[in-house]
Amino acid sequence: KKILIQNETKDELQKMATTFNRMIEKLQENIDKQRQFISDASHELKTPLTVISSFANLLRRRGIKDEEIAKEAIESIYSEANRMQDLTKTLLNLAESEHLEGIEKQPINLVALCTTILNQLQKVYKREINLVEDGSTPFIKGNELKIKQVIIIFLDNAIKYSTDKIDVFVESNQGMAVLRIKDYGIGIREEELENIFERFYRVDKARSRETGGTGLGLSIAKNIVKLHNGEIKIQSKENVGTEIIISFPLAKI
Ligand code: ADP
Image 1 (cartoon, rainbow, N blue to C red):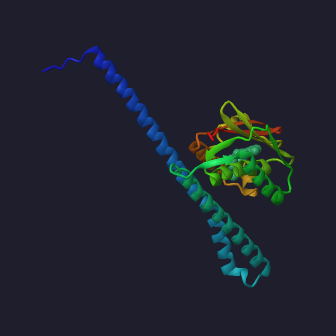
Image 2 (spheres, rainbow, N blue to C red; image 1 turned 45 degrees about the horizontal axis):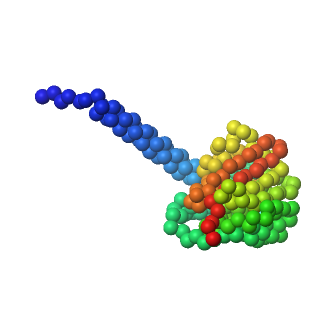
């Protein structure tokens, strides 16, 4: 017995099939990304481990008799072990930032929070970091520790990738609290801009290794800002500098 399918039903079925296909494509994309992430994470951990293992072996064979070799081996083992420790800490942090749905939020005075952070960082890095506010004293609703982490991630990058002063603006604009972090450093090429929020992505891997980067900071920041219904925009020009614009909905207080 033949079943007659009316045109309308056909259209509906076609639409469903298209939606379904799209869902599968998205799922596959996520699986691929996850696979890539595990492969990258393993690689990042393997590199210092290889150095540690080679130097330990060298030490085992010759080091004890040769003071020069012993010194070099111990230094390398120590610094690579530290790097592994930092990386595992950051990886745990990233995993945590993906599951923050139920986290406690309270009203946060952005100017007060930025002032505290800037004072702390200025002491450590001895850099000129200016806070410019428009007098509106914006409050947002958020988790103070996590918002602090976001601001530090962006300031840390501004410090790492520039040598001049850094300007931080706190403003209100159309129902949003806006935080702008502006540096006058090396900048980011336009074609790199869409990549830098990817996990483990670094524009210059060698340089970033020197400065102690993991390529995970911006991914963590993105997750936290998203959880606070915020948005990150970035404007950058090579050899001119970078401006990060983060906006959060203003809290009703
Ligand atoms: P990292 O730990 O390497 O800094 P991030 O995820 O924080 O990792 O940043 C990813 C990459 O984006 C960095 O390696 C760097 O190449 C680029 N980047 C981020 N912030 C800046 C900035 N303010 N100026 C220039 N480049 C930047």
